[in-house]
Length: 266
Image (cartoon, rainbow, N blue to C red; front, side, top):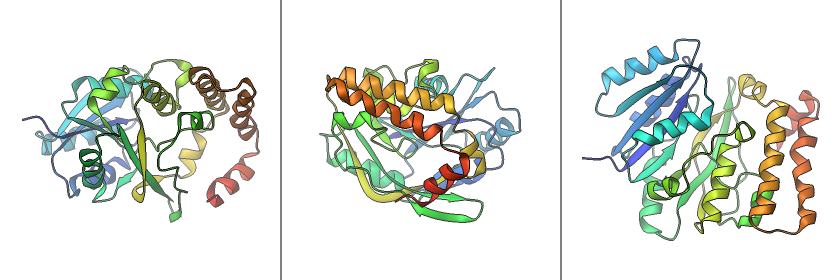
């Protein structure tokens, strides 16, 4: 019998954090799920750690492997190709899902057929512990808000399977690396679907020195690219293209300034 929820997790060089991430799923109040892991060419023991869990929980966990690093877009599509659930959830290999996360999101989508996506705010933590809870996004975002950035937190989201498949899953393009979620929401909203953001934080995102180091300037250019796509897709006024400059300007900030603003924003 197919599970209700398929959880997609691309994993890459996260051997030290993966056990905590998977354990948080095994401790969920909702048990009707499968976890699909795809190793994206890790150079550490990530695949071995994942295989250990697959052997212990063969009825719950599927494990795939890319022969070389393909990026998260392609990796998640590989997971999606074998997913059997009615709902598709996401999670990263260095984060933590709080025990009630899956059940809360499942209940919401089951009770609100008018929404295709549900996500929530997140608690940010590093090697020293929790340091902030992210500001809640608009509960019911409008398409025009996609010029400013992602409108649903990706890692803790849940999406109806038929919707994500209808829009072709994640788009694979170098210009969409690190912004695959933003572009996915653009496609889903362009298809006429809408999503909802729960005010309740149900997910903890690891935001340590390693995570900050992955925020390279070339990905800021990708953010500008998707912002411009949003202007075009939703036929917004031409002058709103100016918002595409914001990620570029942020990318030019000195790292100490960026770290301070990032840790202390609401």
